[in-house]
Image (tube, rainbow, N blue to C red; front, side, top):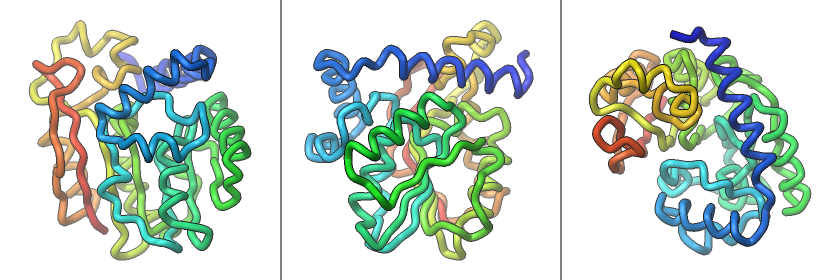
Length: 242
């Protein structure tokens, strides 16, 4: 089994390579649009963001259930090229603020370029690990994340950090991959499946238990669909409150 440092290096390398292969051409954009449409994004949502923001990497649409309001401060865990971050900006308006956190330099560079293209001045992208967030206590109203927490070796630490940065009464809205039954050893050790949101996933009941142990309440699974390996995984979209 690989240790936490090795896992993070595999993930960073994989997502850095994704930015290099995403040329933003018509063909790749259509693929991302189709994949995101299957995840629950509308054509209107996909057309609201700068070209190159949507890499088709999600497993749901957490923004759809977040009920974001003008003036709120939102954190996007594992913000990538900025797709969900920019959708959130549209909802919180000029009086709101959105912070994207990602550990991959190439993704951060791409997201900042996209922010300039879109003329967004109330969004920022910070380099950081979602297990050790670069935010102050009680800094945000809402945390969103799309198919990222499953990649983190220490998911309990992610949830505790998320709880820390949320204001009292704040909410967490996430789409993620969980296991419906334990994975065979050969799948757990597969590097491609590790960065592909499968090998690092944990059982659904354990995932939800970690949320509760971290202090979250009113945990609700809004949607569940078969995952990439339908015999073992599921994609869930859920909400939880501080």
